[in-house]
Image 1 (cartoon, rainbow, N blue to C red):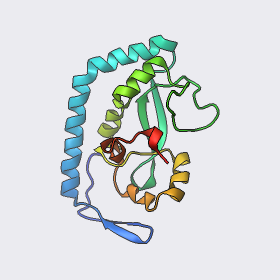
Image 2 (tube, rainbow, N blue to C red):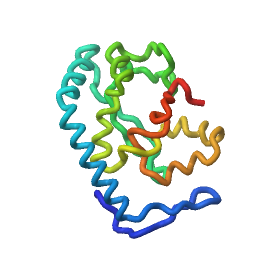
Image 3 (tube, rainbow, N blue to C red):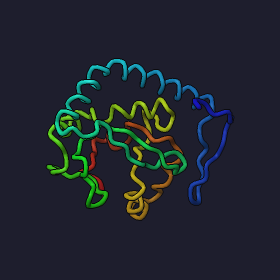
Image 4 (cartoon, rainbow, N blue to C red):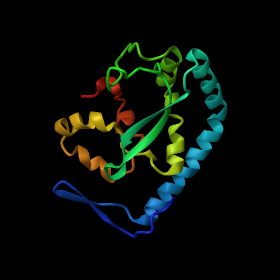
Length: 178
């Protein structure tokens, strides 16, 4: 569940390979992910309860939203977020959000601006499908476009996806994507 018993392994992506860190480093990273996730969850627990109440109060819909994303080795994982859009926001198909998107709720605008909508993903880190730091997981339907536009896009599958990744560290968000 928490740790891999392998000492070292190589993953092949396309025509090149990458030597993945030893299992000792993976264990240390995993322990760090668990410790920091638990700490953040405990510290933000009051915020989580208040946000849950406000989301429900706004339109009586579900508090959480799950999505299928591509994870380690391309395996499909489910991530959980606070719902920041109206219940049937993707009735016309899957799409990235835009500036001033009408599908986003009032409380959702605040959650997204403060990145609070991402807090429930800490539970994905605890359960092992995500890490705190790693490439942001994307929806498989959207990835089909990215495979064609971004060279070596599939190389991101050698790492466990993270809550915080390159887009956040370079201050790019969904409105700046290709």
